[in-house]
Structures are given as C-alpha cells and as structure tokens.
Amino acid sequence: MKSVTAEITSGTISEGLQIQLQAGAYSGTEGSNPGIPAGNLILTNIPQVLISNIGTCNTGIGVNVGHQLTYTLSISDYNSVKSSSSTINVLFTIIQ
Image 1 (tube, rainbow, N blue to C red):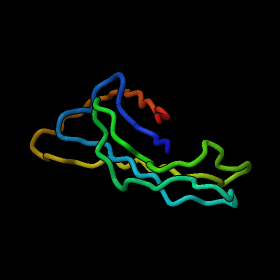
Image 2 (cartoon, rainbow, N blue to C red):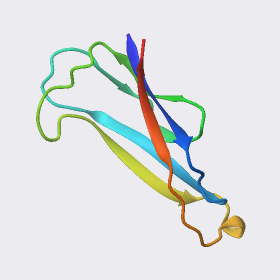
Image 3 (cartoon, rainbow, N blue to C red):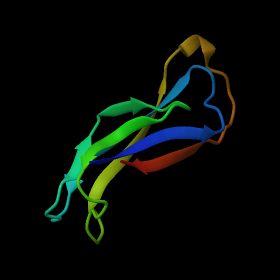
C-alpha cells in the first residue's frame, strides 16, 4: 500500500504559531482503495503520514474529487507571537 507524507521543506513559521494540515475523507466514485486520512497534523520539517493505505494513485477526475486539504494557522504561545511575514514550502511525497 502507498501513503502520502507532508513536510515543510523551506521557510520557517514565526515563533508562537503553528500550521496544521488535515486531509478530509475521500470524495468521488473511484472504486479502488483511495486511502485513509491520518487526521490533524502539525506541520514540521519531519515527514509525517497524511494519508495511508492507498491502493492506487488514481483518485478520479473532476472538481471536488479526492481528499480535500485544509490548512489552519493557530497560536501555540501568545507571549511569543511577533509581527512578521514568512513563506513556507510544503512537500507532498507518495511512498510505498
């Protein structure tokens, strides 16, 4: 079975903040095993499994087909938050 991992590959998140990523349940008509979402992840520079037990990489064709991804920015430490701007890059990898 295949899985999809997610990790931050460049950039930094401002101190006191965290970015969470969640893959929703599969939506579509693909007959194979489209995988199981892992739940809510706090993104770091270490690869984490986002979707596991994927039987095929084909999630179907069309709008709103597949696993919808939701990013959430939250405050982890109010005392550490400072006004700033940053850019991060998230890498998704399909592994067996």
